[in-house]
Amino acid sequence: MIYLDYSATTKPDDEIIDTFNKVSKNYFGNPNSLHRLGIESKELIDNATKQIAKYINVDQNEIIYTSGATESNNLVIKGVCTKYKNRGNHIITTKLEHSSVASTLEYLTTIGFEVDFVNVLDNGLVDIKHLKSLIKDRTILVTISAVDSEIGIRQPIEEIGSILKEYSKCFFHTDMTQCYGKSKIDLTNIDFASFSGHKIYCFKGIGGLYKKNNIVIETLIHGGKSTSVYRSGTPGTELIVSFAKSTRFVMEKIDENYKYIETLNKKMKKGLSKYEKVVINSTENSIPHILNISILGIKPETFIHSLEEYDIFISTKSACSKNGEISSAVYSLTNNEEISVSSLRISLSHKTTVREIEEFLRVFDICYKKNIFSKN
Image 1: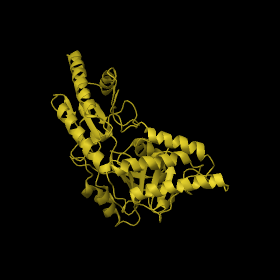
Image 2: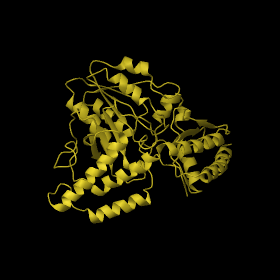
Image 3: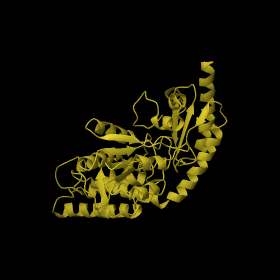
Image 4: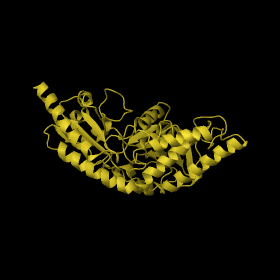
């Protein structure tokens, strides 16, 4: 099997599974309980949180655990808009956002909020001049992903955060799910950042939200005591500890892994560029972990299933996108519907081998010729 869909999800590392099992067996006490078993579990969570905070350079009290980035995105966007609706009703975003951001904003427009989309340049980066022009006195939130999940463009989040500091009524949120553990990010001028465990060889069901200490938002989930007043529910000790260990694994080798994946990306891009009907959508600003292409005239699902016959797995658009839609991310970049309806996403990992890339390119050639000739 050749797995090239790491941006959709990752297989948990064996060491992470071992950690989960050990914590489940030995620290099963409710962290909210006052007896020794509960205190031991809480101490384990506190130590894990300190470790995560160290790697992303924030205060441990600024981390809110959630079920994943989708919940985190909902929590911050709805939490800000509910809490600060007296300040204004205007939000700025891009067409590159994950569906958990886009759908949440779409919902907010039905209850009186206004959403503007900032333009992206030909290289995929946010048009900073246009962003500034969109900011109004009633703008309360700007939400822009650090790395989008389809094309992999790394936005100048740090620069945007510095600009938005001048607007005291406006908060800045970034979904850094596709950036976490892959590309370094400075959160100094960012108010909120979402992340998820299953993108870094941990489990589905654990993620978080970084929230600056001095900001108050409304909560989505009410209930009893937890690790934060902003998200109720019994803390999952084994999930949190596992996520901290995954964070350590990816952060300690972030530069080494990045350089290695760059070599794989270049090899793949070179191999795919020779095909007449292949369009490379990822730009020079895309992280090497994601390579988005379009094969003109071939339905993406058809090509995916052709590769699947050889036990090779890639995806079309984001795994959370609605079926049958064009890629809004690719369309916002190319303004070309034919390219946007035929986009495919190949996502790489430091676990991907050179041999796997070579085999993928060999099989790609077979599937490409088979599908092109069958149409002629």
